[in-house]
Amino acid sequence: MKFGNVVIRRKVPCTMRDGITLYSDIYLPDETGEYPVLLMRQPYGRSIASTVTHAHPVWYASKGYIVVIQDVRGQGESEGEFNPFVQESEDGFDTIEWAAGLSGSTGKVGMYGFSYQGLTQWAAASLHPPALKAIAPSMCPADMYHGLFYPHGSFALGNHLPWAFQLARDTAQRAGDFETAEQCSRLMRSPEEMLWKMPLNEKHPILEQYFPAFYDWIGHQTYDEYWERMNWIDEIAREPVPALHIGGWYDGFLMGTLQSFEALQATATPDCFHRLIVGPWAHIPWGRRAGGIDHGEQADGGHHLEQLRWFDYWLKGKEDMELPGELPIRYFDPLSHEWHTAEQLPPVFEDGHSPSEWFYLSGSQTPANGAAGGGRLEKHKEDVEEAVPDVFVYDSRLPMRLDSYLPSDRAAIQERQEILVYTGGPLAEDIPIFGSPELSVQYQTLGGPTDLVAILTTVSEKGTARLLSVGRTEICSEGADAPNVWRTAQIRLRPLAATLPAGSYIRLELTGSAFPLFARHPNGVWDETNSTGTGGLKIATTAVRSTEQDISCLKLPLKR
Image (tube, rainbow, N blue to C red; front, side, top):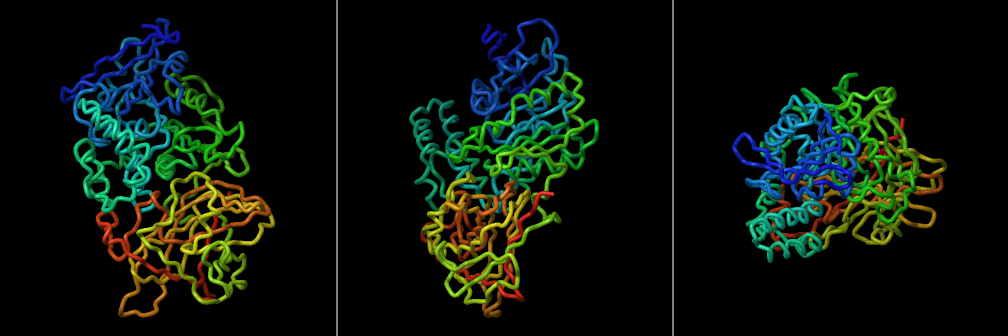
């Protein structure tokens, strides 16, 4: 059949090595000839084809590609049982080799797509299929533990509970259980009640029946063999394929995108180089108004044409005199609304050595609780005032709220007394940040172990407090044999790029939760965040100090 001036073949079978048949829709140019293949493998119904962020397959086919959109195993109309991530390596390899042999194919295959459709690219690339010549994974990690589920060492509950119900919905629908599928649709749209449910591993009957993998995710809180088999970075880096990475500053999977780019960029050669684009985007959509802020007409970044340019170079051999010599990183500054380029990405998971701007936490005669308190960020150590330690109470039954990484206004919640707030003076000049802020805090805690969460905002002259970054770590209680011992907590915050304008203020929040972005810590137990019932939710008290001998400080990485 024809649609949109291209030829479409529906439900084309492809048999895997174990005899399971997967089905694809194939879009072809309406002219005879040989064309490279663009493959997308996805679990949401192949008609969608990542069009929530990507151009429709008709567009790519019209540009001279055979486009294959496949339902992964156990999803859509494909046979088999869906087992997220672990099934995608071998199935991806087999599909790529099949696609390379399609009638009219040049034998060269590229893969594209975002989120799960990006994960299928990493999985397939880990087995090094000979026909795979380039990929364009967007907003996805190659390391499931660090880049997707536990990016700050705590389960990303707010992202993954609704997603679990979405995948359960599709499984229930395949089984003909339409009533349960409708329940799942309601829960994925309005998961609030489920987010508050404790313990997390108390199995919900719908997830237990239709998506039990959720309980594997929360049951493996530390990096172990379960997660190791879903970390493809080392294997891909051993024999890399050219990769165009696309991420968003507000996307929940940003750290995974940066991690995979950093690993592959270390292997780059003139014959296999990589690129990174980071825009002012959430996971969906990739527009100009993320978080209700207009980032300007240029926020789009031309990502459709950049992907086409990438595949034209690697799959069609089109001469592009500029692409090989361009700086590998292009990113948007959400505050200045400008695109920039860079040679190197600041370290994502390790301490960096880039130029830095320092701020020192200071007490005062007034407690630092809430924005109206006396907490200050000083530019010079000698200005730090030694005062009574600042103290906040974290009640795990009523955690402090943070729903996403969007640039929301935190001014209202910063009035809460359960938050320590440290504010700097007006900046004398613009400060361009690029990288991961690092925080060192002197603390004591009662009722721990517990979480220490750091949230960084920029405060405008009008008083709005725009979210910039967040990080967390688990801190321990004072031991009975070591009274009044102060410990040091190190928190590496989420990477960002932002030019802080002159006249604005830096503000730091310290509290015990960022719920439901991170699963809440129940307090008082080690490594049992997901398995403690409501009756086990306790209260922890944390003290923070900054003295000349034991300074608490914030380091902002400057753009080189």
